[in-house]
Picture (tube, rainbow, N blue to C red):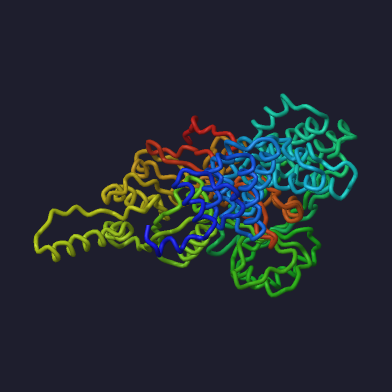
Length: 621
């Protein structure tokens, strides 16, 4: 070590280093006197990890946290010294500090490892003045780890006894955590549940897990649970979402107006959505004898603001439409809408949404964002992308890059293509093959000799995003292997799948992963089988739009629920539907992979507490 380098070391750590080198224990120096996490760990090690030394480490970590230096605190708190040697009160203090940095850093991987050894009753180990903070950190840590059941059980076990406001807040959080817990985990917990509070919560959560359960049935199930558990903490007050379900199950729209293009160039699209809406209405067994008036208006060649006012005069509870983006943008300048509007498209970003406007559609941006999230969840955070030219491709590129940047991923290269160009050159550009050739040329010029050269693609690519139709995708996918990318997984939006299995032609899409709506990936669902039998031409040609119409009907009675209850959702035929604070409905679709030319459903990317039932892949017929 040079003299200059030695002067760069702070005094406390330098003294520890000298004593370590001499084989001595730095008497009188404790970890909390060090100026760096590495120095504190070195001092603790020289002291043989005594309890005093471990407490000094924790004191140093706490000091870093107070200074908002959580990364330095993490270096200490993730050390094997603390994990292996802490016990008693020192262990409890270590866990509290670790949870604080996990939450502050939003460190999901650390949370998953840490939660494996975190007892549900850990919060009870702290004195009353620190218990509220311990509960909050413990719940947030389990939540970050994806262990939603343990997070809920923490809150159930620590529920306040008297404060009604705290009880209501607790109940809402417990319910949202149980909603995110898998049915398998709920059933396993119910079999060994101990205590009135926990048993009641689990029974409530399981009572609403029936597939396809309607709003009315959910309301009845909640009321039945309240009668069976009248003294349960969740019975009064009910979680806000459940109270709203009960209310909305008794107050549904009685008059709806459909405003769709039924003539002109978009007529087929409008009719498919209309047919889906009516199909959902006629198959709604929960309506019983209740009547719903549905008026239908043709929006073709009509100024939508004027049409909206004409429809408003008829007194509907809800208007569904328009489909055309220009028509929707025309109504945006209004500050508020007199009649709620469920638009079947999205406003331009520059437009401010008026009150009572809800936006729902089959958005390409939604799919781009889900591809980004799947890439990161699959631990493939660096990808390249092939996207066609055009305004549609512009929107996909922007959404893909933006979401990847938000969640810690990166799009290394985007190549835009035209269907008429040479796809070999396109893929070579995607993989930066030219840079490999240029390096070889440079070496030859430097040494003055010809060298044997085999081109190589760039080596930092984890995956490929392929935005293409089935015809174009079948040409691109084999070229990836030709240009040394055969080992890279390919991710695509729903455009890659025609909607009908075609093994002979889709063998060229082998192993391509893609996202699509449940309607397309679950052909054996009862709703699809019934409507496909009744309307085979419509559902085959316009299946995604027909499903959109069916979901528009489902949304008609759940707009208030989705808009007023955070984290609430609807299991629809176009995906799991939720709503942003701005009234925009977002969709979480399903995933599939081509195997032997057939799409095979993939399970969602799972977290620590979710089922990992990926061994049984079901081909789509």
